[in-house]
Image 1 (tube, rainbow, N blue to C red):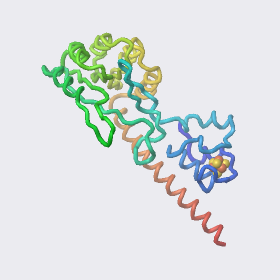
Image 2: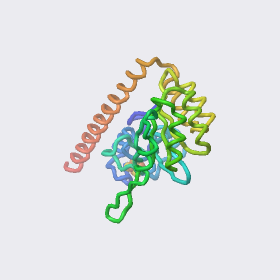
Image 3: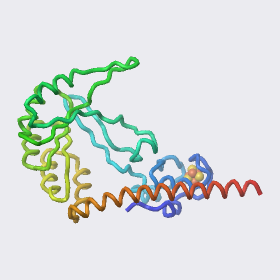
Image 4: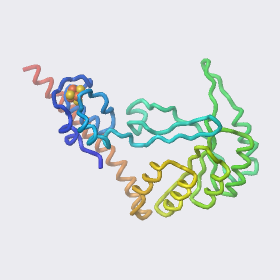
Length: 251
Ligand code: SF4
């Protein structure tokens, strides 16, 4: 469970040395709780505290690497959920979503695969393709793989269909989507078989293991609301703290 700002504060050196660029350890703790800074910004955290703070310092989304034929797209490992909170370290991947039932899927993918835009001396292309399983997924994957080497995302909730499609993509880092409370166990088996990250499977279990679909929806709403509230409280505490600091210096 994530720690609150006050709990984090108790694990910090509490010297208010300002080397993290915050006026106090409390202000830094509040920002850390809101995942707007990294723990490494404080050089004086003890090893013991680091262990206890590991969860708070961990990125909200784990690193996922999509791979195919030497091409890689990395997503996650960020310390915040939204671009306006802090710079993202990994460039967001640009994937074109297509339907498996589309009879022209190979033609469309070939055209998109060759598309390139040169902007101020840099060449921009698509990073990969996402295939929605509204038809024969394996046949669509075969057709797509025949015209592009870029990484793929497979979208569907039928574990058997995802299993046979992944069988056509050995040694690739393909992303499968989406697990929910009704299919996460079957998808976890498929993911394990095709070596999808253990971390992803653990996250599914943790998130969906004991929940009904309605609970999952409600949980997601609560997570969003909670993140907003945390941000508001952290900002407010920082303001109060800064005002106290200003008043202290004034008088
Ligand atoms: S660098 Fe560490 S000890 Fe110094 S103010 Fe920041 S959190 Fe506190």
